[in-house]
Length: 561
View 1: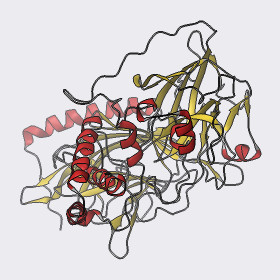
View 2: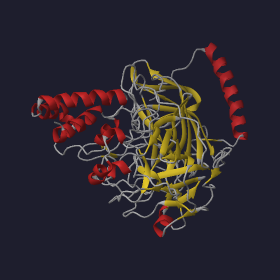
View 3: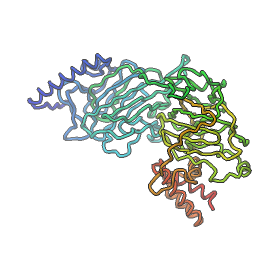
View 4: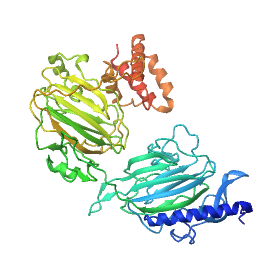
């Protein structure tokens, strides 16, 4: 038998007034296209049976058990039974692109979620006070997982940008804009599902975050263009109220309109002005005003290439990587012969360890470097960046003669680098946007198709004799630290791109480091310390610090004197 706690008489009038206010707001919401998903009509919007869910006027944490919720008489609140472990609520109606508003309350240590199409989950959890939230915390896009041999995550999901969770027993508001995956007439997926925006208690915690796979243990489940909305009710006490949904359409965002003095290379609609090989036609699509390539490419040959050739120019372009990925912008010819690279320079766009590098200097044969007399000081040293995944970023690339300046989100990462004689051709060349082949086993992960998206591609050709204003120089990484264009910045970035040694496991990090350090000479240990100190100054917020240290250690062990 359920025990209901009634409010004092004096509070009933207040509750009635609040209910009237809510009903007025609900009427307004209906006028704005919202459809309520409540339970006052015997859970009519939800598939049956609904298990132990019941309707209450309000919810609160049980004073005798903080891991439980109790309801008060009335309507408007859905609670998942006394035990908090019953069937999940599943809408009868399938949805495509939707906007969802839901208010929820959790008990201590409770776990729930909002799941779209049965595949893509925004986590609901008692995460109050967590300092560094993960994908499994409240507001996170839940990680992929495996159930065997024991339940474990196989990726990190997408943590919320900030922890906006309130304490257990408080009502919290969650607003989600979800865009469904896209499919062609043959049923082939052409675009991933996406959480356009997720707002928790007034804080934007997810934005333009793609979900290539289903979340949780069913990550390889078939994806569909439409499906139900699910409120999870089988992992702990949770209450929901003011649940409503309405169709969502992309706003009138102005894309691909060039700023003054620039010309658009991409019109946002088709491939006018571009050359595509047969592989390229199979790999690239135009959607929502962006060029997108998410497919797995086994062999090179699917780059996008402009029909026109350019010599001196300023190029503006937005890019986004839905997952860890690799791409690049190619321009101008190279004079030295470059095996396994091609004959045009590439400004590298990479999510780990290579953002902004001029790739020719890393693939140039040692014999060519010696013939040209190149030393470390002659090489470009881009500031270290691991950009945020799933978010649009802007690159500005200025190429004048043998001089290149690059900016990333307004920050200068290459400051008037001048190519040595005999490296960069001064002849006009097409501009190419790289579709990278599948990566297997590098630090971008196994069988990574390297998805990439581009939009707002604008160019301004520079006439001979024109001088572009100087870029603002970079600030130092830390007070008293080395500047970001320090001589070892390029070396450290190359080290970060190395694989971890086969004998290394994070669980036995210190044991591994102690053993390897014991085998080094005094000079080698000093070199490790020097590079590690500089690495921390250049990249103080680096992820996976232990792994970065191990890569430096292995580099010095193999090369250090």
